[in-house]
Length: 500
Ligand code: BES
Ligand code: MN
Ligand code: ZN
Picture 1 (cartoon, rainbow, N blue to C red):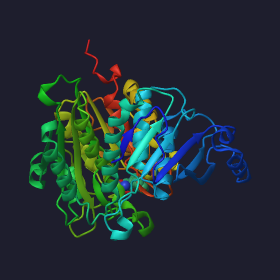
Picture 2 (cartoon, rainbow, N blue to C red):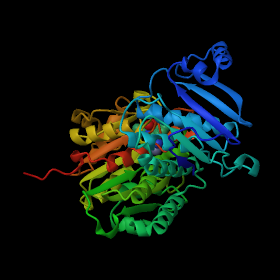
Picture 3 (cartoon, helix red, strand yellow):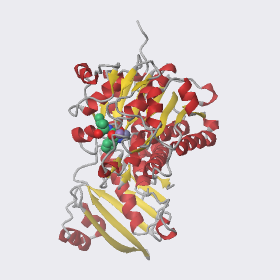
Picture 4 (cartoon, rainbow, N blue to C red):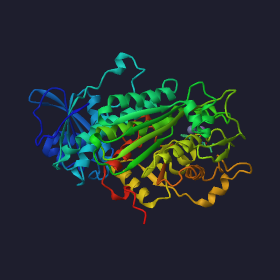
């Protein structure tokens, strides 16, 4: 954790400081650091354009100070660029061994909600220090040099966002750890234990956890989920983590967050080719996001009753695997003919959606690494959002923008339900290649019942191959920031409108 300060003036020079400035134009360099530095910056082609960097060291009252200039091109106006600026600054400061980062954002940020700016800066700075180091030796595992952050800015009240930012970053880091953990470690049982220990640690904040074992899921008729689980040597764990605000504080309503929790997706008998299977430890990123977000909701005492639901399982190959052509029965009685065992996520989510429906939530949101087609449609960084509810979609997309996560709406045209028809069952589990994300969404809609429901396909952004935004290679923790932003906002659209 970075100890964060919001001083009105630059802190006094001390050992191991890094000064990072976000610059919109190069003209201020001479005034601040003298002509020699300005000339050197020009020679190094630093023009304060986005992506430009110029670093030097100077001696200040006997202390060597690292100075790093980051070009912005224009004032940082979006949540994503603000968060990234702080991320890059912390990373750069840490890389030169600084213990104290002085982040000078004067002139760098476009005016906006100061509290949110503060949260984004703190969140970004923390994420700049993230690494997954469980399997590294002591040398590479060293904790970050950087321990202190002083932010200089034009906006008062930024400090009020510090707690939000710190909690946000901690939850994102937790979700990343779960995604980065190999499937051999992060099994359904491990996910269940993570949820349980989170509930134990924060029982006083209103977190509780219940895990349904296979026999209980059988009793509840979760035939789709259990079919997926059948081929694995790891037992399935149906995880239900709840949060209720402390002392029976009034709540605005009840929310279900469902996360796809396939801890490894081999494809099952519709086996994935080796290249496509690599990386499938990330198929539980939705589960990681909702479990982590629930801890965040508790720490921030958000005014909602929130349920995180994960039908955790592996999708494996064995003599016990479910087969192509099998007809399964879901917890709501619907029958599904399996035409591809690699379309397993929607099967697990279907039974989770039916379970959520019994809780009579005001709204239900699922996050799932559901389809490769979503990456084809929107590229590797943008999540696909599907919902029949206009208001909820707007609220979610707005929250995503405020949180700095890229999302885009896809339609749910009921005409494509045709593609899910089966001659011998209520439906089959895949449509055509064309519109693959949409038919997956339409499949889920059959199990949402009368819930006010929104589906987020995070197949692309859950894990990045090349550094993007505030994520280096690996799990991103995508979704956590938007969930927390949505549930901390006072958007009235979230309340269920009374039936007339
Ligand atoms: N977990 C995958 C989706 C996925 C693919 C996520 C690539 C991230 C990166 C999902 O279970 C899956 O295999 N979907 C199939 C659906 C198809 C069989 C209809 C797919 O996308 O190919
Ligand atoms: Mn699959
Ligand atoms: Zn999958």
